[in-house]
Image (cartoon, rainbow, N blue to C red):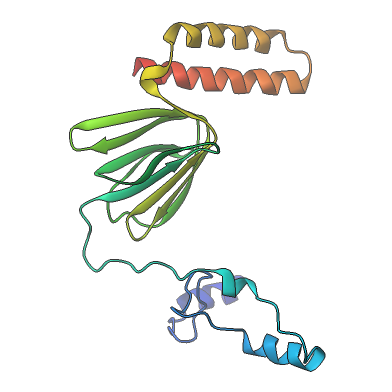
Length: 200
């Protein structure tokens, strides 16, 4: 089994025969011919339904030269914070650590943890505290950041954060069930991240 895997890895890739990504779509919608033929045999009087392939949009083209700006979309379930905003850099609090995204960044998906999202535009830096979410970085220098909750860092009251951290630490110490411990631990983690965001 291991030998077979290594020979497959060493095999040169033929671009025509290699497996395509699901997002590598032709520029025009192409119907699945075998599905349509099978459908016509079963139900000749009814148009065939659309397959998932017919709903997907083609992948945006990758620019030939490195763009100078990064286009950012930052949305929450109830509002859009940034829409197609061109910036110099975004720093997201990924679960693997702080991740800086510049124009031309490799396509990536990152899970967000509680922390500071920084949007750099020239000398201006706008900071948001995000609770969790995902960042989708596309190869065409577009970054989509989807957060569950976010608030500008300058709108957070440091005294309330300290009080919340003390309350959740006390709840964690007095928790008796696993559910109580998990809820208290989440509160401690979020308030600790808020506290470090305000102090740093």
